[in-house]
Length: 218
Image (cartoon, rainbow, N blue to C red; front, side):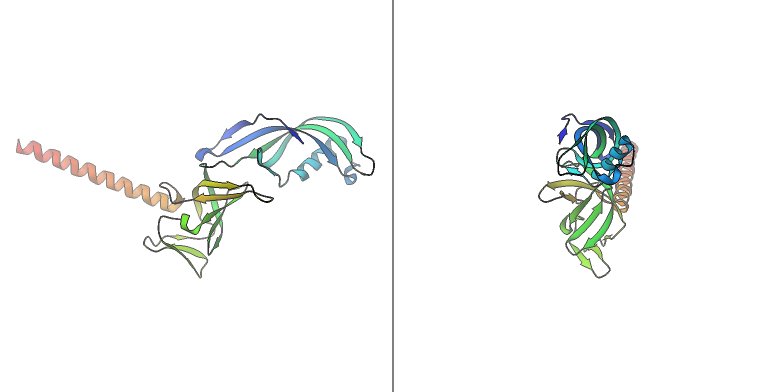
């Protein structure tokens, strides 16, 4: 398969999540079951099937085939009942990068950590990286912080950072952390922000009182 080497970022969401439109050139193998359709429709349906769950280390996870740009003449290979069409088309792909911030929902809690659904793919947060605390797994399928009493469970919305990507096997393994400042369950981030704002307001009030006291002494 040939792919263009130029990756064109078309959308940069918050948290630096990157999507790319990539132009691909390939011979598309159209199965005999699609021969009753018009060529363009047959190629399109075959592409949607081929790229339904497709991941490439260089291109990333294909989200959807956007547009077919060109379809050449069909080729028949002896012994193969399918037809091959040299085609050019565009796909929308999401490519994970180390240090990238991602927003997602906790899909599953286990004794060794949490799996987070990032939309295009899933990642894993080791139990030691779920929060800045000693964490334990309890019978209600949740992770609990010993000192903070914070609880992480399925369906919680979180902000995490990618710290490792392994391409061994059929699909990539993505490791994440939520221990760094500004990361974690969205409720925790809001709590920390409120706490910080209160501390800043208190400090400003104390500074204003101290300044007033100095003026009165003069």
